[in-house]
Image (cartoon, rainbow, N blue to C red; front, side):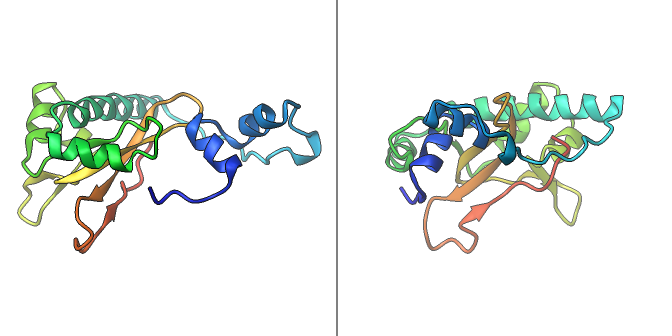
Length: 171
């Protein structure tokens, strides 16, 4: 399935844990104090930024519901082949612009879709989805299982851009 690494990294991914949690689970011991990970001071987050972060999590959840519902059978076979034997909640972004219509019907604005890196504007100012005809890979917050964004994998290897990653968001 293309995943590489050692048992430590596999367990970390499979159990959705951070480094410290993985160490403690695998060694059945407390994380050594002298190996404490350095943490930078958290930036101050304004009330507006907090609301925007929550909006991004909410719209990403709605997009994930869209990507994981109504997956065509031939795409399900590809997803099952690439899922590496453990659930990773892959989805599918269809070629058409259904995501935009779905999110609009849920009450999300063009600005919210762009802020969540789900849509972009073309040169003429038209909104279109970033991920089209791709397997979608949700990117989760390790600690709280919130969806921070989506990566997209092209269905064929001859596509110019095989992987699309989300642009940076406040989430």
